[in-house]
Amino acid sequence: MKSNIQKVYSKLPKQELSAHKIELALIDGLERDVNKIYEDISRADGVLQKGAIEAERISKSAALKANSSMDTVNKAEQMAKELGIDLPQIKELKQSLQNAEKRAKEITKKAAIAAK
Image (tube, rainbow, N blue to C red; front, side, top):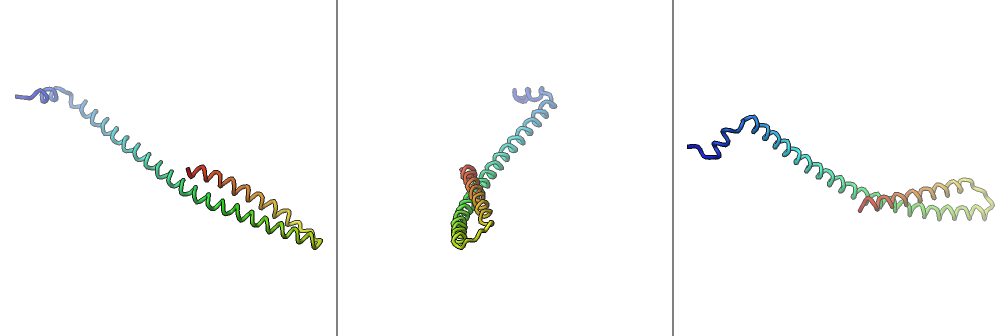
């Protein structure tokens, strides 16, 4: 004698069960894909944070170097004035160092935000 479950199962169309199996397999595959996507996002976030920390360190160092070099340029400018010499390169160097320091500080701010 067949149990109730076997009776119900025998009356169900076989094709419908196959379709359900395919749908379930698709769902399982999609769930794995979504999990993989979140793992990738997490890894990318970690890489970004590490890179941002390194970028912040490098840009701070560059800003300090630019500032220090500006002190040297100012001393050279003062010496040139004392000697009565006009050095046009000093103006260019000052502008370049100001631009470099400004850019380094901008990168430092961006890196600090990305590192959070």
